[in-house]
Image (cartoon, rainbow, N blue to C red; front, side, top):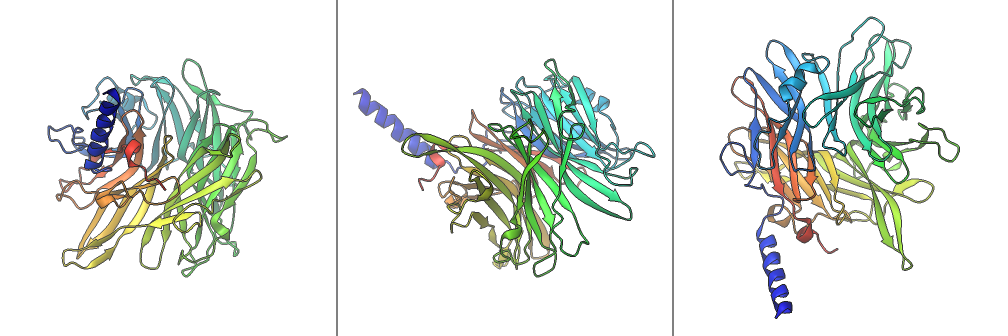
Length: 505
Protein backbone atom coordinates (compact mmCIF):
# COMPACT_ATOMS: atom_id res chain seq x y z
CA UNK A 1 0.00 0.00 0.00
CA UNK A 2 2.83 2.42 0.90
CA UNK A 3 4.60 1.69 -2.41
CA UNK A 4 1.40 2.47 -4.36
CA UNK A 5 0.96 5.70 -2.42
CA UNK A 6 4.53 6.83 -3.22
CA UNK A 7 4.03 6.12 -6.93
CA UNK A 8 0.71 8.00 -6.85
CA UNK A 9 2.34 11.05 -5.23
CA UNK A 10 5.19 11.04 -7.75
CA UNK A 11 2.67 10.98 -10.61
CA UNK A 12 0.78 13.92 -9.09
CA UNK A 13 3.95 15.97 -8.64
CA UNK A 14 5.17 15.18 -12.13
CA UNK A 15 1.81 16.06 -13.65
CA UNK A 16 1.66 19.36 -11.74
CA UNK A 17 5.22 20.32 -12.71
CA UNK A 18 4.60 19.89 -16.43
CA UNK A 19 1.30 21.77 -16.18
CA UNK A 20 3.35 24.81 -15.22
CA UNK A 21 4.97 26.77 -18.01
CA UNK A 22 8.51 26.69 -16.67
CA UNK A 23 10.23 30.03 -17.13
CA UNK A 24 6.95 31.90 -16.83
CA UNK A 25 6.25 34.65 -14.32
CA UNK A 26 5.56 33.51 -10.74
CA UNK A 27 2.32 35.33 -9.92
CA UNK A 28 2.87 34.97 -6.16
CA UNK A 29 5.39 37.81 -6.47
CA UNK A 30 4.28 41.46 -6.61
CA UNK A 31 4.22 44.71 -4.63
CA UNK A 32 1.04 46.40 -5.86
CA UNK A 33 -1.66 43.89 -4.97
CA UNK A 34 -1.79 42.53 -8.51
CA UNK A 35 -0.70 38.91 -8.95
CA UNK A 36 1.51 39.37 -11.99
CA UNK A 37 5.01 38.19 -11.02
CA UNK A 38 6.82 41.51 -11.24
CA UNK A 39 7.20 44.78 -9.40
CA UNK A 40 8.19 48.36 -10.08
CA UNK A 41 9.83 50.75 -7.64
CA UNK A 42 10.50 54.38 -8.44
CA UNK A 43 11.35 57.69 -6.83
CA UNK A 44 9.52 61.02 -6.87
CA UNK A 45 11.31 63.54 -9.04
CA UNK A 46 13.75 61.05 -10.52
CA UNK A 47 14.27 57.63 -12.04
CA UNK A 48 15.72 54.31 -10.89
CA UNK A 49 17.32 51.42 -12.77
CA UNK A 50 18.48 48.01 -11.55
CA UNK A 51 21.91 46.65 -12.48
CA UNK A 52 22.66 43.80 -10.05
CA UNK A 53 20.48 41.34 -8.12
CA UNK A 54 21.20 38.77 -5.39
CA UNK A 55 19.08 36.59 -3.09
CA UNK A 56 20.29 36.11 0.50
CA UNK A 57 19.87 33.10 2.78
CA UNK A 58 16.50 34.36 3.99
CA UNK A 59 15.18 34.59 0.44
CA UNK A 60 15.25 38.39 0.41
CA UNK A 61 15.97 40.05 -2.92
CA UNK A 62 18.75 42.62 -2.86
CA UNK A 63 19.06 44.99 -5.81
CA UNK A 64 21.63 47.67 -6.63
CA UNK A 65 21.58 50.22 -9.41
CA UNK A 66 21.47 53.91 -10.18
CA UNK A 67 19.07 56.56 -8.95
CA UNK A 68 18.80 59.81 -10.88
CA UNK A 69 17.55 62.83 -8.95
CA UNK A 70 16.51 65.41 -11.52
CA UNK A 71 18.53 68.61 -11.21
CA UNK A 72 21.07 67.03 -8.84
CA UNK A 73 22.70 64.09 -10.59
CA UNK A 74 23.11 60.36 -9.99
CA UNK A 75 23.80 58.25 -6.94
CA UNK A 76 24.11 54.57 -6.13
CA UNK A 77 20.88 52.87 -5.06
CA UNK A 78 20.49 49.72 -2.92
CA UNK A 79 17.10 48.26 -1.98
CA UNK A 80 15.87 44.99 -0.52
CA UNK A 81 12.57 43.15 -0.86
CA UNK A 82 10.96 40.27 1.02
CA UNK A 83 10.36 36.98 -0.83
CA UNK A 84 6.81 38.02 -1.79
CA UNK A 85 7.97 41.35 -3.26
CA UNK A 86 7.15 43.55 -0.26
CA UNK A 87 9.66 46.35 0.34
CA UNK A 88 12.03 45.53 3.22
CA UNK A 89 12.59 48.67 5.27
CA UNK A 90 14.94 46.90 7.71
CA UNK A 91 17.71 47.80 5.26
CA UNK A 92 18.48 51.47 5.73
CA UNK A 93 18.62 52.28 2.03
CA UNK A 94 18.21 56.03 2.49
CA UNK A 95 20.91 56.24 5.15
CA UNK A 96 23.22 54.07 3.08
CA UNK A 97 22.79 56.29 0.04
CA UNK A 98 23.68 59.38 2.07
CA UNK A 99 27.03 58.02 3.26
CA UNK A 100 28.27 56.49 0.01
CA UNK A 101 31.15 58.40 -1.54
CA UNK A 102 29.94 60.66 -4.33
CA UNK A 103 26.22 60.60 -3.32
CA UNK A 104 25.37 62.82 -6.30
CA UNK A 105 27.72 62.20 -9.20
CA UNK A 106 27.64 62.12 -12.96
CA UNK A 107 28.21 59.20 -15.32
CA UNK A 108 28.05 56.25 -12.94
CA UNK A 109 29.41 53.39 -15.02
CA UNK A 110 28.36 50.21 -13.24
CA UNK A 111 27.10 49.02 -9.85
CA UNK A 112 27.55 45.49 -8.50
CA UNK A 113 26.61 43.31 -5.51
CA UNK A 114 28.20 40.26 -3.90
CA UNK A 115 26.91 38.52 -0.75
CA UNK A 116 29.15 37.34 2.08
CA UNK A 117 28.40 34.37 4.35
CA UNK A 118 26.49 36.43 6.98
CA UNK A 119 23.85 38.17 4.81
CA UNK A 120 26.12 41.20 4.70
CA UNK A 121 27.15 42.29 1.23
CA UNK A 122 29.79 44.01 -0.85
CA UNK A 123 28.80 46.96 -3.00
CA UNK A 124 31.05 48.33 -5.73
CA UNK A 125 30.64 51.05 -8.33
CA UNK A 126 32.56 53.49 -10.47
CA UNK A 127 31.99 56.88 -12.03
CA UNK A 128 33.72 58.97 -14.67
CA UNK A 129 35.19 62.01 -12.92
CA UNK A 130 38.44 63.06 -11.26
CA UNK A 131 38.98 64.26 -7.72
CA UNK A 132 42.27 66.06 -8.29
CA UNK A 133 44.81 67.15 -10.83
CA UNK A 134 47.08 64.13 -10.54
CA UNK A 135 44.79 61.28 -9.53
CA UNK A 136 41.52 59.69 -10.64
CA UNK A 137 40.08 57.19 -8.17
CA UNK A 138 37.14 55.79 -10.06
CA UNK A 139 36.14 52.56 -8.32
CA UNK A 140 34.84 52.18 -4.79
CA UNK A 141 34.17 48.97 -2.85
CA UNK A 142 32.17 48.88 0.40
CA UNK A 143 31.44 46.09 2.86
CA UNK A 144 27.92 46.68 4.22
CA UNK A 145 26.03 45.00 7.07
CA UNK A 146 22.66 43.30 6.79
CA UNK A 147 21.02 46.44 8.24
CA UNK A 148 22.84 48.84 5.90
CA UNK A 149 25.74 50.00 8.08
CA UNK A 150 29.04 50.56 6.29
CA UNK A 151 31.61 48.16 7.78
CA UNK A 152 34.50 49.50 5.72
CA UNK A 153 35.61 50.29 2.19
CA UNK A 154 38.43 50.83 -0.25
CA UNK A 155 39.11 52.97 -3.31
CA UNK A 156 40.83 51.52 -6.36
CA UNK A 157 42.92 53.11 -9.09
CA UNK A 158 45.50 51.66 -11.47
CA UNK A 159 46.54 55.00 -13.04
CA UNK A 160 48.36 53.14 -15.79
CA UNK A 161 50.17 54.94 -18.57
CA UNK A 162 52.14 58.15 -18.85
CA UNK A 163 49.18 60.48 -18.18
CA UNK A 164 47.72 60.14 -14.71
CA UNK A 165 45.05 62.81 -14.41
CA UNK A 166 42.35 61.48 -16.74
CA UNK A 167 42.39 57.73 -16.38
CA UNK A 168 39.24 55.73 -15.83
CA UNK A 169 39.58 52.53 -13.82
CA UNK A 170 36.00 51.31 -14.03
CA UNK A 171 34.39 48.66 -11.87
CA UNK A 172 33.38 45.50 -13.75
CA UNK A 173 32.48 42.66 -11.38
CA UNK A 174 33.62 40.92 -8.18
CA UNK A 175 33.72 37.50 -6.54
CA UNK A 176 34.18 36.51 -2.88
CA UNK A 177 36.34 33.66 -1.57
CA UNK A 178 34.55 32.77 1.68
CA UNK A 179 37.16 30.47 3.22
CA UNK A 180 40.16 32.59 2.27
CA UNK A 181 38.38 35.89 3.13
CA UNK A 182 39.41 37.46 -0.18
CA UNK A 183 37.42 39.67 -2.51
CA UNK A 184 38.64 39.77 -6.12
CA UNK A 185 37.47 42.83 -8.06
CA UNK A 186 37.66 43.04 -11.86
CA UNK A 187 38.52 46.47 -13.27
CA UNK A 188 38.39 47.85 -16.80
CA UNK A 189 41.73 49.68 -16.84
CA UNK A 190 42.32 52.67 -19.11
CA UNK A 191 45.99 52.92 -20.05
CA UNK A 192 46.46 56.57 -21.00
CA UNK A 193 49.41 57.63 -23.16
CA UNK A 194 47.77 60.77 -24.52
CA UNK A 195 46.85 61.37 -27.31
CA UNK A 196 46.34 57.60 -27.56
CA UNK A 197 45.05 55.14 -25.02
CA UNK A 198 44.07 51.52 -24.74
CA UNK A 199 42.27 49.30 -22.23
CA UNK A 200 43.39 46.24 -20.27
CA UNK A 201 41.81 43.66 -17.96
CA UNK A 202 42.61 44.36 -14.31
CA UNK A 203 42.16 42.53 -11.00
CA UNK A 204 42.46 43.94 -7.48
CA UNK A 205 42.57 41.59 -4.47
CA UNK A 206 41.19 42.77 -1.13
CA UNK A 207 41.42 41.12 2.29
CA UNK A 208 38.10 40.90 4.14
CA UNK A 209 38.31 41.40 7.90
CA UNK A 210 36.58 39.03 10.31
CA UNK A 211 34.46 41.81 11.79
CA UNK A 212 33.79 43.45 8.44
CA UNK A 213 35.64 45.81 6.14
CA UNK A 214 38.23 45.40 3.38
CA UNK A 215 41.84 46.37 2.69
CA UNK A 216 44.28 45.87 -0.17
CA UNK A 217 46.16 42.53 -0.25
CA UNK A 218 49.60 43.92 -1.05
CA UNK A 219 51.05 40.43 -1.63
CA UNK A 220 48.99 40.14 -4.81
CA UNK A 221 50.57 41.44 -8.03
CA UNK A 222 51.87 44.99 -7.81
CA UNK A 223 50.51 46.35 -4.52
CA UNK A 224 47.24 44.34 -4.78
CA UNK A 225 46.82 44.89 -8.55
CA UNK A 226 47.48 42.80 -11.65
CA UNK A 227 46.54 43.28 -15.29
CA UNK A 228 46.37 41.42 -18.59
CA UNK A 229 46.19 42.51 -22.24
CA UNK A 230 45.89 41.03 -25.76
CA UNK A 231 46.38 43.76 -28.40
CA UNK A 232 45.13 41.61 -31.29
CA UNK A 233 44.72 44.39 -33.86
CA UNK A 234 47.46 43.72 -36.41
CA UNK A 235 47.39 47.35 -37.56
CA UNK A 236 48.19 48.57 -34.04
CA UNK A 237 45.48 51.22 -34.19
CA UNK A 238 43.13 49.77 -31.57
CA UNK A 239 44.46 47.88 -28.58
CA UNK A 240 41.21 47.83 -26.61
CA UNK A 241 40.65 44.86 -24.29
CA UNK A 242 37.39 45.49 -22.44
CA UNK A 243 36.72 43.49 -19.25
CA UNK A 244 33.10 42.52 -18.55
CA UNK A 245 32.96 39.81 -15.83
CA UNK A 246 34.90 37.74 -13.30
CA UNK A 247 34.42 34.22 -11.97
CA UNK A 248 36.21 32.10 -9.37
CA UNK A 249 37.80 28.67 -9.49
CA UNK A 250 37.46 27.96 -5.78
CA UNK A 251 39.23 24.60 -6.12
CA UNK A 252 42.45 26.09 -7.49
CA UNK A 253 42.19 29.58 -5.94
CA UNK A 254 42.25 31.40 -9.27
CA UNK A 255 40.00 33.98 -10.90
CA UNK A 256 39.16 34.30 -14.57
CA UNK A 257 38.31 37.68 -16.06
CA UNK A 258 36.32 37.61 -19.29
CA UNK A 259 35.65 40.33 -21.82
CA UNK A 260 36.40 41.13 -25.44
CA UNK A 261 39.41 42.23 -27.46
CA UNK A 262 39.38 44.26 -30.67
CA UNK A 263 40.85 42.47 -33.68
CA UNK A 264 39.56 44.50 -36.64
CA UNK A 265 38.85 41.57 -38.95
CA UNK A 266 35.59 40.33 -40.47
CA UNK A 267 33.31 41.80 -43.12
CA UNK A 268 33.14 45.25 -41.52
CA UNK A 269 36.71 45.27 -40.10
CA UNK A 270 35.20 45.59 -36.62
CA UNK A 271 35.95 42.06 -35.44
CA UNK A 272 36.12 41.39 -31.70
CA UNK A 273 36.93 38.23 -29.76
CA UNK A 274 35.72 36.82 -26.48
CA UNK A 275 38.86 36.90 -24.32
CA UNK A 276 39.90 35.43 -20.97
CA UNK A 277 42.73 35.91 -18.45
CA UNK A 278 43.29 33.60 -15.46
CA UNK A 279 45.10 34.95 -12.37
CA UNK A 280 46.32 32.96 -9.36
CA UNK A 281 45.49 34.30 -5.88
CA UNK A 282 48.34 32.55 -4.09
CA UNK A 283 51.82 31.31 -4.99
CA UNK A 284 51.48 28.29 -7.27
CA UNK A 285 54.10 26.35 -9.26
CA UNK A 286 56.66 29.06 -8.60
CA UNK A 287 54.33 31.83 -9.80
CA UNK A 288 53.77 34.64 -7.28
CA UNK A 289 50.22 35.79 -6.44
CA UNK A 290 48.67 37.83 -9.23
CA UNK A 291 50.44 36.03 -12.07
CA UNK A 292 48.53 35.64 -15.34
CA UNK A 293 48.85 31.87 -15.62
CA UNK A 294 46.92 31.63 -18.91
CA UNK A 295 45.14 33.86 -21.42
CA UNK A 296 43.18 32.84 -24.50
CA UNK A 297 40.42 34.04 -26.82
CA UNK A 298 38.17 33.15 -29.75
CA UNK A 299 40.68 34.70 -32.15
CA UNK A 300 41.48 31.28 -33.56
CA UNK A 301 37.87 30.62 -34.61
CA UNK A 302 36.98 31.16 -38.29
CA UNK A 303 34.76 34.05 -39.36
CA UNK A 304 31.93 31.71 -40.30
CA UNK A 305 29.33 31.46 -38.79
CA UNK A 306 30.14 34.84 -37.21
CA UNK A 307 29.70 36.90 -40.37
CA UNK A 308 31.25 40.06 -38.99
CA UNK A 309 33.52 38.10 -36.63
CA UNK A 310 32.24 39.90 -33.56
CA UNK A 311 31.97 37.72 -30.46
CA UNK A 312 31.10 39.98 -27.52
CA UNK A 313 31.24 38.62 -23.96
CA UNK A 314 29.05 39.91 -21.13
CA UNK A 315 29.31 37.22 -18.44
CA UNK A 316 31.44 34.22 -17.51
CA UNK A 317 31.00 31.42 -14.96
CA UNK A 318 33.33 28.64 -13.74
CA UNK A 319 32.09 25.19 -12.69
CA UNK A 320 33.74 21.94 -11.70
CA UNK A 321 31.99 19.08 -13.46
CA UNK A 322 32.36 15.55 -12.12
CA UNK A 323 32.73 12.78 -14.70
CA UNK A 324 32.42 9.08 -13.91
CA UNK A 325 35.50 7.38 -15.38
CA UNK A 326 34.43 3.91 -14.23
CA UNK A 327 36.88 3.94 -11.36
CA UNK A 328 35.41 6.98 -9.65
CA UNK A 329 34.37 10.58 -10.18
CA UNK A 330 36.94 12.98 -11.61
CA UNK A 331 36.54 16.75 -11.44
CA UNK A 332 36.86 18.60 -14.75
CA UNK A 333 37.38 22.36 -14.85
CA UNK A 334 34.80 23.99 -17.10
CA UNK A 335 34.10 27.57 -18.10
CA UNK A 336 30.96 29.05 -19.67
CA UNK A 337 30.73 32.45 -21.34
CA UNK A 338 27.76 34.26 -22.80
CA UNK A 339 27.20 37.38 -24.87
CA UNK A 340 26.26 37.76 -28.49
CA UNK A 341 27.56 37.30 -32.01
CA UNK A 342 27.04 39.72 -34.87
CA UNK A 343 25.46 37.92 -37.81
CA UNK A 344 24.51 38.96 -41.32
CA UNK A 345 20.95 39.98 -40.38
CA UNK A 346 20.94 40.36 -36.60
CA UNK A 347 22.76 39.70 -33.34
CA UNK A 348 22.15 36.37 -31.62
CA UNK A 349 22.60 35.04 -28.10
CA UNK A 350 25.87 33.12 -27.80
CA UNK A 351 27.01 30.48 -25.31
CA UNK A 352 30.49 28.93 -25.35
CA UNK A 353 32.09 26.25 -23.18
CA UNK A 354 35.78 25.63 -22.45
CA UNK A 355 37.35 22.74 -20.56
CA UNK A 356 40.81 22.54 -19.02
CA UNK A 357 42.78 19.66 -20.53
CA UNK A 358 45.53 19.71 -17.91
CA UNK A 359 47.63 22.29 -19.74
CA UNK A 360 45.32 24.74 -21.53
CA UNK A 361 41.73 25.90 -21.77
CA UNK A 362 40.23 24.43 -24.96
CA UNK A 363 36.78 24.39 -26.55
CA UNK A 364 34.59 21.49 -25.44
CA UNK A 365 33.82 19.91 -28.82
CA UNK A 366 31.08 17.77 -27.29
CA UNK A 367 29.11 20.89 -26.38
CA UNK A 368 26.42 22.58 -28.44
CA UNK A 369 23.94 21.32 -31.04
CA UNK A 370 26.70 20.68 -33.60
CA UNK A 371 29.55 19.70 -31.28
CA UNK A 372 31.50 22.90 -31.90
CA UNK A 373 31.72 24.19 -28.32
CA UNK A 374 29.19 26.87 -29.26
CA UNK A 375 25.44 27.37 -29.08
CA UNK A 376 23.91 30.31 -30.93
CA UNK A 377 20.22 31.18 -30.94
CA UNK A 378 17.77 34.08 -31.08
CA UNK A 379 14.11 35.00 -31.31
CA UNK A 380 12.03 35.21 -34.49
CA UNK A 381 8.74 37.08 -34.31
CA UNK A 382 5.82 38.23 -36.43
CA UNK A 383 5.05 41.94 -36.48
CA UNK A 384 1.57 43.53 -36.59
CA UNK A 385 1.32 42.79 -40.31
CA UNK A 386 2.46 39.19 -39.82
CA UNK A 387 5.84 40.05 -41.25
CA UNK A 388 8.86 38.02 -40.16
CA UNK A 389 11.24 39.79 -37.75
CA UNK A 390 14.64 38.44 -36.64
CA UNK A 391 15.35 40.19 -33.35
CA UNK A 392 18.62 41.71 -32.14
CA UNK A 393 19.50 39.56 -29.11
CA UNK A 394 22.02 40.44 -26.40
CA UNK A 395 22.87 38.17 -23.44
CA UNK A 396 23.75 40.07 -20.26
CA UNK A 397 23.92 37.53 -17.42
CA UNK A 398 24.68 33.83 -16.94
CA UNK A 399 23.86 31.32 -14.20
CA UNK A 400 25.01 27.67 -14.09
CA UNK A 401 22.83 25.52 -11.86
CA UNK A 402 24.62 23.25 -9.42
CA UNK A 403 21.99 20.47 -9.42
CA UNK A 404 21.98 19.38 -13.05
CA UNK A 405 24.47 21.69 -14.77
CA UNK A 406 21.80 23.45 -16.79
CA UNK A 407 22.61 26.98 -17.96
CA UNK A 408 20.37 30.03 -17.68
CA UNK A 409 20.92 33.19 -19.71
CA UNK A 410 19.19 36.51 -19.21
CA UNK A 411 19.25 39.47 -21.57
CA UNK A 412 17.02 41.30 -23.98
CA UNK A 413 15.70 41.21 -27.54
CA UNK A 414 15.15 44.30 -29.67
CA UNK A 415 13.12 44.73 -32.84
CA UNK A 416 10.84 47.11 -34.71
CA UNK A 417 7.16 46.35 -34.99
CA UNK A 418 6.54 48.50 -38.06
CA UNK A 419 7.75 51.89 -36.80
CA UNK A 420 7.59 51.05 -33.06
CA UNK A 421 10.88 50.15 -31.38
CA UNK A 422 10.43 47.33 -28.89
CA UNK A 423 12.77 45.81 -26.31
CA UNK A 424 11.72 42.94 -24.04
CA UNK A 425 13.63 40.94 -21.49
CA UNK A 426 14.54 37.42 -22.58
CA UNK A 427 15.44 34.23 -20.72
CA UNK A 428 16.94 31.07 -22.19
CA UNK A 429 17.72 27.71 -20.65
CA UNK A 430 20.22 25.19 -22.02
CA UNK A 431 20.91 21.66 -20.86
CA UNK A 432 24.40 20.84 -19.60
CA UNK A 433 25.22 19.69 -23.14
CA UNK A 434 24.43 23.06 -24.72
CA UNK A 435 21.04 22.15 -26.18
CA UNK A 436 17.99 24.36 -25.66
CA UNK A 437 15.92 22.73 -22.90
CA UNK A 438 12.73 21.58 -24.62
CA UNK A 439 10.95 21.06 -21.29
CA UNK A 440 11.26 24.76 -20.46
CA UNK A 441 10.09 28.09 -21.82
CA UNK A 442 7.39 29.31 -24.19
CA UNK A 443 5.92 26.32 -26.03
CA UNK A 444 8.80 24.28 -24.60
CA UNK A 445 11.26 26.10 -26.84
CA UNK A 446 13.93 26.70 -24.19
CA UNK A 447 13.21 30.44 -24.55
CA UNK A 448 10.96 32.90 -22.73
CA UNK A 449 10.21 36.40 -23.93
CA UNK A 450 9.54 38.40 -20.76
CA UNK A 451 6.39 40.25 -21.82
CA UNK A 452 5.03 42.18 -18.84
CA UNK A 453 2.39 44.40 -20.41
CA UNK A 454 1.54 46.41 -23.52
CA UNK A 455 1.89 49.82 -21.85
CA UNK A 456 5.54 50.48 -22.57
CA UNK A 457 7.55 49.01 -25.44
CA UNK A 458 10.98 49.01 -23.78
CA UNK A 459 11.82 46.82 -20.79
CA UNK A 460 15.30 45.45 -20.15
CA UNK A 461 17.02 42.78 -18.06
CA UNK A 462 20.47 43.64 -16.69
CA UNK A 463 21.11 40.74 -14.30
CA UNK A 464 19.65 37.40 -13.20
CA UNK A 465 20.10 35.07 -10.25
CA UNK A 466 18.52 31.88 -8.96
CA UNK A 467 17.27 31.20 -5.44
CA UNK A 468 18.41 27.64 -4.78
CA UNK A 469 15.86 26.85 -2.08
CA UNK A 470 12.84 28.00 -4.08
CA UNK A 471 14.19 27.20 -7.57
CA UNK A 472 13.13 30.67 -8.68
CA UNK A 473 14.72 33.01 -11.20
CA UNK A 474 14.92 36.69 -10.27
CA UNK A 475 15.78 39.41 -12.77
CA UNK A 476 16.37 43.12 -12.47
CA UNK A 477 16.44 45.90 -15.02
CA UNK A 478 14.63 49.05 -16.07
CA UNK A 479 11.05 49.91 -16.93
CA UNK A 480 11.15 53.20 -18.87
CA UNK A 481 8.19 55.43 -18.24
CA UNK A 482 6.44 57.89 -20.52
CA UNK A 483 5.64 59.95 -17.42
CA UNK A 484 8.27 62.72 -17.58
CA UNK A 485 11.09 60.20 -17.88
CA UNK A 486 10.55 58.70 -14.42
CA UNK A 487 12.06 55.28 -15.14
CA UNK A 488 11.38 52.58 -12.55
CA UNK A 489 13.40 49.76 -11.08
CA UNK A 490 12.06 46.47 -12.47
CA UNK A 491 12.23 43.09 -10.70
CA UNK A 492 10.57 39.92 -11.96
CA UNK A 493 10.31 36.39 -10.58
CA UNK A 494 10.06 33.28 -12.76
CA UNK A 495 9.35 29.61 -12.10
CA UNK A 496 12.38 27.38 -12.62
CA UNK A 497 11.91 23.87 -11.30
CA UNK A 498 15.13 22.12 -12.32
CA UNK A 499 14.03 18.83 -10.70
CA UNK A 500 11.54 18.24 -13.50
CA UNK A 501 12.68 20.66 -16.15
CA UNK A 502 15.95 19.15 -17.34
CA UNK A 503 16.02 17.33 -20.66
CA UNK A 504 17.42 13.80 -20.58
CA UNK A 505 19.96 14.22 -23.36
